[in-house]
Image 1 (cartoon, rainbow, N blue to C red):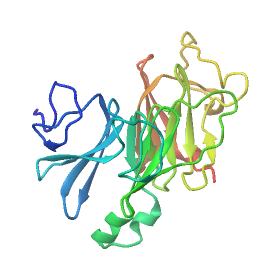
Image 2 (image 1 turned 135 degrees about the vertical axis):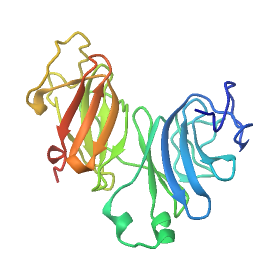
Image 3 (image 1 turned 135 degrees about the horizontal axis):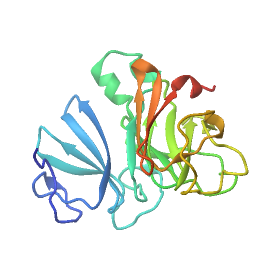
Amino acid sequence: MQVIAGSRGEGMVDGTCQKARFNDCNGLASTIDPSLGPVLYVCDVGNCLLRRIELSHDRVSTVAGSGLLPGNVDGPVSKSRLYCPEFCCWDRGPHLTTNHNPESQRQRQRLYISSCDTIRRYDCDTGFLHTVQLPPHPLMRYYFSGLKCLPNGQLIVPCGRAMMVIYVIDPVSGRMHGLNGLNESNASSDEPNAPFVSSGPLKTFRFKICMGLEVMDEECAIYVAEYSTGAIRRVQLSDAYFY
């Protein structure tokens, strides 16, 4: 094991990996850039920034956001703002595989970034940051605690604090669909002391504090790790393809 960037000291410093400073890092997303080689994108939560680590060039840089002015401001990354970005993932939609040219592939890449109640999209080809328009929550504010992308380009996002609903989001249209536990009697209530349920109908089930989320294409399944119960649950992806 080794430290590749940053140190125990918190801060907001770009430059060489050894001298760089972060503040409460969380989500990571990797890719191979034709000109930069392997890179890691980092959600720097405390600084409200999206950072990039160029592994072959020993360099850390800020991609989007202004640490001095947090917020949700779209536009070119030099003028954009982020508010506590927590998770990120690459768009895996079919438009990424229509051309086998590596340069074209890079130009079409999109990185999705989530904060507590907002999902943003960073377009590599234009260098712009956009907000994914979502419908208002029927009973409460969204509280996203994860982010994954399906092979069809739709996003999987756990939402809630103690008892959670997993949403599927079409980032193009902004339409959302809850995979589980959606009804007015429980959509706004957190029940940390609810009894453990080993299995049952997905539509009436509420996950208890999802801390891990993974998509397994080979099995067409979503795996969910529940922090408070110690359970790993499996959800068939066929339930997620709702359009």
